[in-house]
Length: 272
Image (cartoon, rainbow, N blue to C red; front, side, top):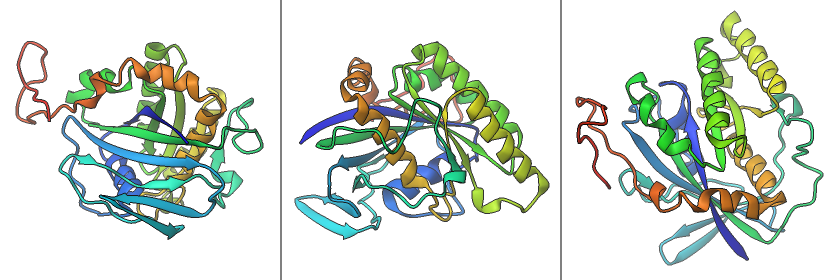
């Protein structure tokens, strides 16, 4: 089975739930008290596009465990998380909670089944002072997951900024998914309903994928990567070539002292 790695970046404001999204995906856990990311954190998630529908495959040292449709935690190795390996299968996702742009038929197109897709996921800091280093992570990325918080209308405007930045930097050679997170709060205020509607309209207008998620409940989190896997598997060589050049450079995470300046003239980074 062919195995390929694809650079993936999480973008969005602080507190939209990027880290919670990544931890829910890779460890199957959620905490209401998640610390803000400093610089960037690194996770991996692997999808097997084969016929073993409905199983998750987890690598744990020399042991391999097969589990029925479940997510299990991996040993935490600091800021690097090996993540889960899950087989690709169709989720029971309500069609109203997602959107695929014309020409990108997520289910129904043929795809290369015998391929293992490894997502190298960079969870970027959302604070304004770290915005200048974000291009390190989204440049030449195969996939970008731009996250907004439906309870915070301004996060949609800022998400639109990231979508534009990615398209300019990568000449539209990145699969973009707009994720409306905290869907568990839908209806709690009028703003949540309106922000969700605006986000879906924006995705349609700009021809990008759209998925409603909840890192708290786990709703649609793995579906985002099923969707990405489907798109990649249509032309895996295209996306593989897109990330190969940056593979070496992106293997090093930036750890930035939150009390230091982020100006390029200062030495504020160290390699992990």
